[in-house]
Length: 640
Ligand code: ADP
Image 1 (cartoon, rainbow, N blue to C red):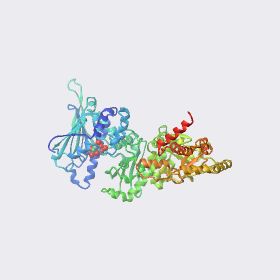
Image 2: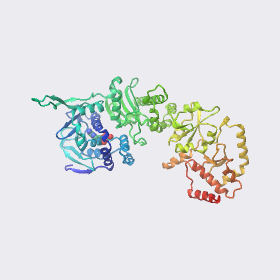
Image 3: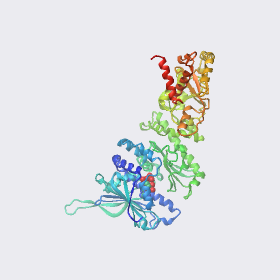
Image 4: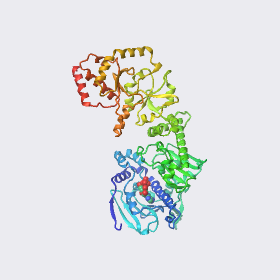
């Protein structure tokens, strides 16, 4: 690259920039945290690459970040001597966003500034946050190991495009110069900058240097002033936060560390910080965020835990350190035992890593157990009370994946589950609560799966349970059926779907009822045979049921079969679902069903019954127009 080139930002970057400049002004000062965090990452990367090639340090082995400003030029510069950017890297990394799912995320922005600024916090703005305070940013950089002539200057006004050109830059690393907007001139102050560094970046393990400012007395009656000297001083603690003793770290410091680590704008819900000793030694600092990131459901999303070995950053997406169902956890692991040149392959196999992963899992689960306990504990601090509910609303569905993935912790996980039910509108019922409320003689924990809570609550399959006063849990998360399929029982009591198999309420059904049902079934036999014949393409079987009270019919699947709802979800997701036909159960004492016998429109009525049962549980008739035709004809006959 010899000449200056003007290039356009990727569309998503342009959108992000627009948002940054229009929505984030109430939280201006975070730009410094983001830029210092990038500088610190760049130094981490250099240190890591230099493990194999010490020449990369050139003649500047001590890594640092310098923050300086120029009052005349109204600029603020954040410079590091980290890994730097090549020309191509500057174009790629500062002109596009590599995170997958970005486009979908941008599509969710509404144009409402307040709502969008909340969302953007989940996304993380990083480098582009500079445009909150700057109307022009100039980046000069040279990648470690490249010759001085292969430096790069990148300049942009934060609108649609940026310029890049080759420069000669003897110093390795990157300097980011912000041309401050008129309303951001107050950052041209040592005192202000120091206080921000103190608040947001004190934990950064590198020294952050600023020029010393001295008080100079005014001459002969003139007022004195602060003068910036040539001498640099370190303005942060410059020791990694996790390496400090717990007792020396304040709540606010933990929170700020989390924000810098995760790019989240909100504080975490909880954290755990431990030095683990034993067969393998490591420090763990793990956070549970207060809200889900935008790409929580992205399966190839990078894990949120950074791995360090003896303070040297190794990788930031070490999946081996936590199971995938805890992928919302953010944090740092610093091992004293792993080799510095640890590779991904080695990570998968290392016994030390397995021990760390198990230790992390246990810690996160006990953190969650503590939150769950505080929720019910009268004596718990007020601010801790809503935390578990908040956690569960954001991450409960992810946690449930653990039931299928982590056999060893299944019981602990089952205790952490919460559901809405026929007895509770909010998702607050634990399996233990349910058991404590079970009726005498009740032999199972009953649940119904549905797309929404309203659909679950109105499900016809529930009718007999309501009548008998039996609680039924609502499972409305997509993962529920799959996940709960791995939980046969809770504390010795089996879980039973109300839409699978025959209802057997055991001793809860009195003899008279059972007898009446048997008699009804007997006298209904000829009608059943005709129904089976009429519906042979749709229903596997047709039988009389006692589970219905007000509804004429419902659909159930066989014991152990896949629910109709799950089969639909799989189909929607483009996956194969077994083509099993459901069983139609009819309520022999319902007026509509009683009309069947002797009706001239028997076949039409049979199809209407089936299709309505399908609609009632959220499905769609195979032939919706045919259904409408039949119902219309019936209504017309009724002479409305
Ligand atoms: P993120 O840090 O989340 O990847 P950013 O938008 O903050 O996103 O930065 C984009 C990329 O630009 C970084 O991933 C990194 O490759 C590069 N980058 C940013 N700042 C620096 C820096 N000071 N030194 C080297 N590379 C940098």
